[in-house]
Length: 127
Picture 1 (tube, helix red, strand yellow):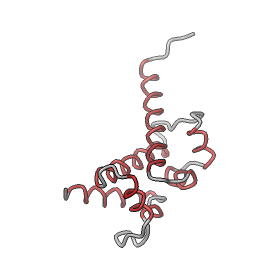
Picture 2: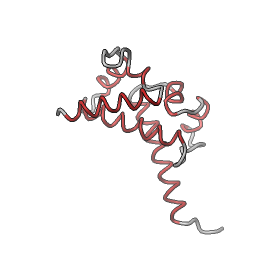
Picture 3: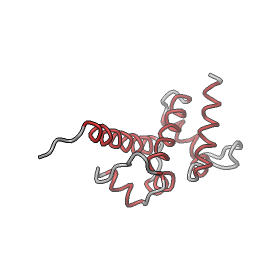
């Protein structure tokens, strides 16, 4: 069996970590597989395969980049609400005048995802 080059192993580990972090953030925010698929630009079946560890997000792909943004959104929101999942879930699902709708709807487009992250980052700066 040939040795795996360290770069390939590191890349595979990075892909696995981001895939797991994306699924965990979705779980903590109560984001369904359908909505997560829409956010990161994959099929619902692919999200299912991610959960079974049969598919990893891959660096250099659009879904990987969108997943990085989604995890960033989670981390910003988590910091603002002090780790309170109930508040984070409510914030995501409830209408917000800043977005003319619920953030959960906005983040299903790339521009909306970026807008929500910018909003959260500006709120974090106030703390």
